[in-house]
Image (cartoon, rainbow over all chains, first blue to last red; front, top):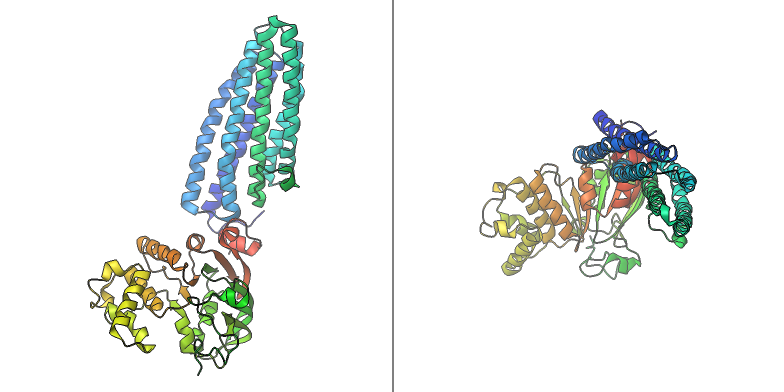
Length: 227
Length: 280
């Protein structure tokens, strides 16, 4: 841990900003978990709770923006402090978008729950596990300033993209084979896509975590520059 | 005594005038001021320890660090202002300006100070007219032709972004100007003798934010022509105006590098702790 600032209020402001980001990430994780459980367990109450949780996350995004601007204005942070503030302000919209994806999943889950269960819903399980792990690890990389973990998360996004692609292919085939369930398969395709988007946001978070910890911009790297 | 400018044959490493030839053309590298292994002491009190850095031409270099860290002492070494303090001396190492050792016995210190102008923390215009403040240095340098002095006065005042504000009252006393105008007059006075380097020792510390912004804007314009070295306690100012920053602590140069790097990702823990306000 770095030594404390001479200005105690500076430490308090940075600490509050960080805590709000971590709280927001925790809430988004819970919302995503509830939304997918609502789908797999066919539990409308969980879906409704997940949708309702989004409001609190939206408010936290605004709070983080406000506190970030306040820290920039009052303390003019530099070096690692500046990177932490910038990263926090960039993390929060990504977390908010993850919560939005959770809401989308919960809404589609409620629609699916109105009809007989589709065995293909199991396709979602590994995709959700991969997306959730990426999200958890990305916020962990930020919280612990773990550069290696951040890099590892970014590398895992390709696997998620592939899983989503495979799911799309299989569900599209099923749509052709069983057109009566077309709407259900379409909802599963969108749910898979939402989880793939969660992975994209987790990647953004991980990239910002690496920037905060090591001042290194690892975005948009080609294979040549990344190695 | 030998003039640094007028002794080309006698001194193989003649001090180059930036207006004529850039230092890098002399040395083959982008270095205007080369500080090498420098130790400096006030009597028995050693205040600079083994300082080595290369100051590039036509750029702004900022020295930052807590009070007493040696940054002003180093600044004053560059035009040998410390010669005026009894017992103050360089005990090891050297400073080269455009390839010439500025402490070599044959160097004319008056000429050196003409090549390396200085602006101080508190503006210090002479209790004379605005015009005379600028013309004074020129007359000392042996320029007496009125038309030549008039031209230099206008050029210097324009260079210091003061001409439009004072052109109709050049004969009025300089002490009647505002603090910010007085500081820009001092900069104009330094520019009048066409230096290569302008040293600035906390030039804005006594100024309000508007006057500070004007000086900072001026520094950006001046660096196109001059090498600027500035000492500042204002971290934001160092971040705004400088291209390179050196952090000093307890007489040692802890870190020197591009300002963006120093203020976003310093390599040294002590730099990080100082600029983020964690010292103490």
